[in-house]
Length: 471
Image (cartoon, rainbow, N blue to C red; front, top):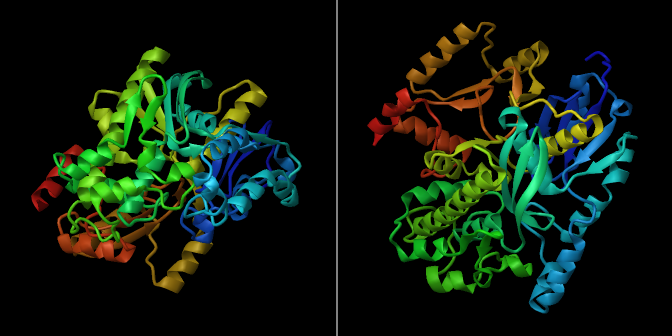
């Protein structure tokens, strides 16, 4: 685009861990946001998000020299002291921290830490002269959540695997100014406990937790397996939650995140095949119950201590839409930040840096259509290459899509700007008829999804009967 002028331009980045992303905030308003995965096609891409950065600047009409500040949702120290003390206290078992990668996305722990420390050099090499502002990870999550609060005021709850040393936290937000109320610290982590069960099931931890959530719907709440995993973590009024650390491998740095206690109680680890193996769904249900109990207790406590009636949530744990629904059904006015994972933390970090630089809060969340925009030339090229049909009129597009879906076909829609975050909201979507089990199975086949995973988890109340009729 054409070169524009602005008072304050903040570029939020997440890199090297899960969900690399770039978020461009101009005078408090987000003008572009995209995960690097949209460009390099690597799920949960941990790369430095150069392509997302280039797209953001091009869309805004800026050069690297125009950027006033870089916001990064990780501190430089990365809680080095706390981690070193933890390793020393638990020698020799904790020597695993020096042998194993931290998770399945990051290949090498030392390389990851070195890249994190070298961020400033990488940013300079990319042509940026602006200072880098490092925001504590859970503060960045909380700042993103606050964007979903009316007037930026209310209570905030964050939770994930681990951000520096924090695993969950509660906050009071007043006009987007955050003050922390309580925090949980590693190894008492709801995200890591959930990931350990995910790994025992045979799925990829730190990636396939959505499969565990879907599998939980098939579990027997009265089973021994559900009782075991339900007891792996519990709410705690002082420290938010406590995890039964003796049952796990992750507290000691081991790549096998679950411990021998899993094998004793549940049997051998699974191969990820799904609910046909007795006990798998029960184990999934138990850990789902456990994180929901934690979230509900922490939510109520946060609301009470903040003196608030509305709660916003963020952090990777709140990608669990079943848990968010449980909070809502419990009567809590909950506002999940839609990009709850670490890509969204880049947005939160940029929002916090903007507020610090200007004394004004960033604009509230009002859209997720913030990514790459399909222009006429690209649409024409794709149409010619793929044989796609192009519609200039929304009504004609809707009629054509409806006709194809009614005929049992699978329809892919791409239009306007891409959504930021993990939810397909109509601009980059795969659509199929909810009246046909064959269509459901075909969608699962095309997307490589297990047959038992849920589809269309959010529908209008008046449309529920379509799904109920399917049994």
